[in-house]
Image (cartoon, rainbow, N blue to C red; front, side):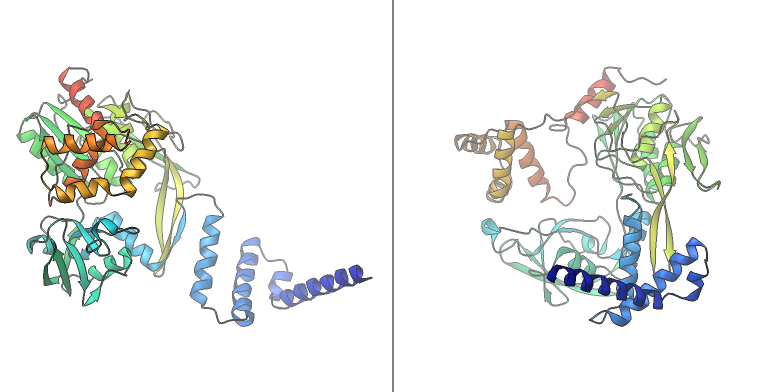
Length: 469
């Protein structure tokens, strides 16, 4: 009897819930409106119902954002997302490569700060961006931001400090810095338009141009053009394009750059479900070559090369203009378009892209012509690496030896091995080099000593193993 009574109570409650829900659905639903309008009506009614009857007050914007995020998540596509106002602003900065700020790369360490208790709770300057307000004021890598507009940064998340430093160009922010152990100074900094450097270039052995593209923003083609023109003036014999760890960016940016190397052929094509020119398009070279076709090109790729980086790599490879060296790329073969919804917006996958050989590389990636990668660490080596990181051994050594000699480095490595660290000397030396570079305002553009992929590219170019077809 008790079991039957429980079932009856449950059925009565369920029936009452259904009756209450239907009571709030407009008559048009019952009259058989189309599916789209049905869903719209239900959505509106559920928003109203929850707002009116939920036990606590709820914000309509919160409900709307939650519903929209759920809708996009149901697609199972990590690249199709609803974007809030702040996320739309961040997306705009990413695609344009510009924002209002002071011009600093910053970071903050979370966790154990025992090896440097005085400094690490604060925000650290990784590097000033050349030509920006902070750079002109003489802010250096390794300085710490201890206050922004009088507010200490020790208990503030990094993204919040970033927002405090950014703002409308022409406005001012007061920042207090710590340099060394006890040098503090304060600057009132006027914000300006900050252009994020997406292109770095230099010469290797005087006749090899090295061009690193970190992402594809709308201003990236202009920066690549400047670098290529400079290389042409210096009459380089070979060129290396480094696309490693490049997450992609604007499609047109990649096609414009590919056009600087190709005088004919397909660069990439996009295909969507809807018959629209904006979704179905074949990008072709238009004879805007900026670098001599007699210059052999090596393109460096890895598992972090994605999207627009893969478009450029495939365009140069499929058209016989470059040889790919490194690891198979990430494999993102879809194209998203950004649309606004008032101040909010969304990014939706609306087409797929295909290489000049008509291949979609989604979830597959682009294999290199020559595979080169650092050896995977063994489990024992991973444990050693983890111990070095967790104990801050490299940071401690560099802090005590800001300009270490070869003898000091050798002694340190032997000390580590005596403690049971089983990493190769080269790995430890590379960790030391990386840490030393963090103290430089303008660290080297490339590292030929420890970068085995770059080493192989240089060797192949000089040996004539990469030729122009």
